[in-house]
Amino acid sequence: MTPLAITLYSDFLCPYCYLLEQNLKKLAASYRFDIHWTGFEIHPELPPGGASPSVLGEAGWDALWERLGALAAEWKIPIRRPEHLPNTHLALEAAEFARAQGKLEEFRDLVFKAYFLEAQDIGDHQVLRGLGERVGLDGAALSKALDEEEFFDTVQDNREKALDDLVTVVPVLLIEGLRLIGAQPVEEIERMIQKALEKRKEAN
Image 1 (cartoon, rainbow, N blue to C red):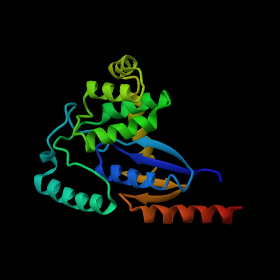
Image 2: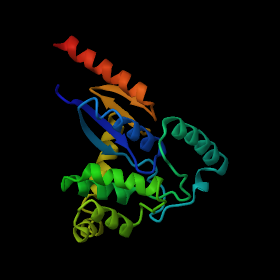
Image 3: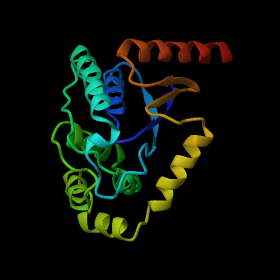
Image 4: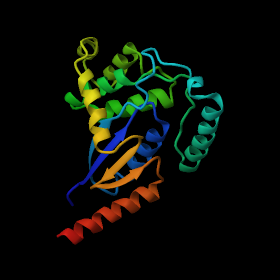
């Protein structure tokens, strides 16, 4: 079977993106995917050093994590509540460097885990270098790319392209053109996959 063409918009800061991607992975053994990931910076207004979650409102942050905790427990996905909101532009730049080196998926997976399981500051240059080295990237080359903003415009362009595709929130999953928004259970993702496969048959 030809792999299913999937476009995924997400940001490392977004817990719903993390949950969706973990559920998508659970289907990888049953279906072949050709995933094109686009990083979408959801809070470009955050300062380079990040900020306390209180900038989003304490009550809203508490309510968000009450819902997230329930979803994560239901879906059996480990997650920890972060106490820091990083600016993710640098992490998204690092991901583009990893893409150029053929290490995008390994690097993305590690960045998500570093933030949502290990409480690391993924907005920090040295943290990103260390994560890159853990997946086999050249740390010095990654640092140079970040210092010289080699992929700065790429991250900006990705956001503009996403907006052109009517993406204003993440995560967004496009399965052969069929759109899913938000953290979705395995069953809903699989339902959309089956719908995409039926659409394929009708087209042939």
